[in-house]
Length: 203
Length: 268
Image 1 (cartoon, chains in turn blue, cyan):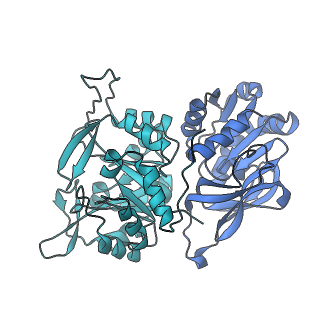
Image 2: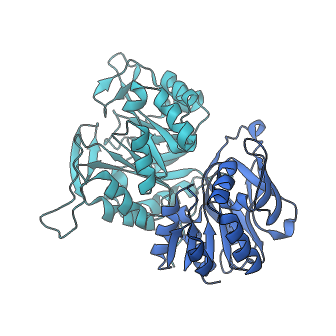
Image 3: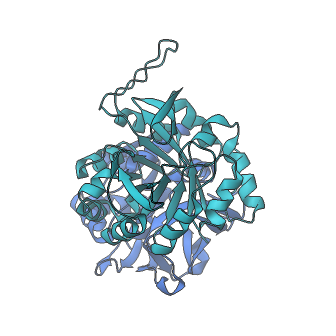
């Protein structure tokens, strides 16, 4: 069973719908016991970083996530804000500490000089490293649906498994041991997105 | 870089899919759920549903089909979002923040607001503040007046506003619209192609993406909307309802014209 973490942010139903469609058992939950029992964990989310962290703390989810993902090495997938929350720090509307699993700072797109709009919304190409467990067998160039204004500036480039270009080249897919993260929305990226969810479940 | 988008637009009336002509004639096409399942597997980039029902009762029950009845738009959103894994936009009868919230909760990613934006432009700002501007698409329906000037209409083409589309587009961008869904009432259902001068003038006036709609009769019209009109996304209704494999075929034409569009990915 995959636990989809419910912390009051984002369209969790879309993720659940995609997993249902794939025939993958999942539950939207913030029940600590259910998260402990789950085989895999997905942290989705759309919204502000500070608010997201605050909610995780308020619901007592930080400890259980650290325990299950870092100690027990459960496969984890962060989606969009869920990718940013596992970073050390974010500069979204202030300065906030994240879960700190990835050595990265979350920064805003600075692409106005390129006449590009922020947020970055739409379908964009990602150059994929097919050695990543969730990308194996796919194409080296895949198209995913993005909606975001910030991205993680990752220190260790070797964990970046997919790069996207929007005026600046930024990390779109990360893999560090059992931790996976994507800046786009696999649940809204049709076939190629669903394929990532399917591979994640089979870990 | 960002791809141009191809977006089927489905018009709903009392729970049924309809074909629209000049915003006034509506031919019944049937079940909106079956249609979306076909379109999704054909690699559309997004979907827009516009509900043009006059009342709040929707019924999908058909005497000739044993389909489960769907009474309201929320059920339609829920059903569509269970099979359709691309961004979903819903428009029609959206007047309050609660209307937006309910649609998002059921699986919509964005909403189109039109008449309510005209009646109270601050509704755009409010929606953008609560849900993010990427969530708020403002619909602009345009008609050419007898003096050849363009004018914005609301209430699904029934009420003239006295506004010029360029002035209104700038205003809605300022208020926080994330995108503009631009439809031509004159071209709707005619298959004569987009109103390119209209698209160009709105695209030039704003920096948010413009989705062009109204008049597509052949796939080459999509190319015109992007290349000549400068639209970020091209939309149409009827051509997708009446042409087999229409999304795949349209994408071939766009790709051959050198447009950066998401390739069609075969379902395994």
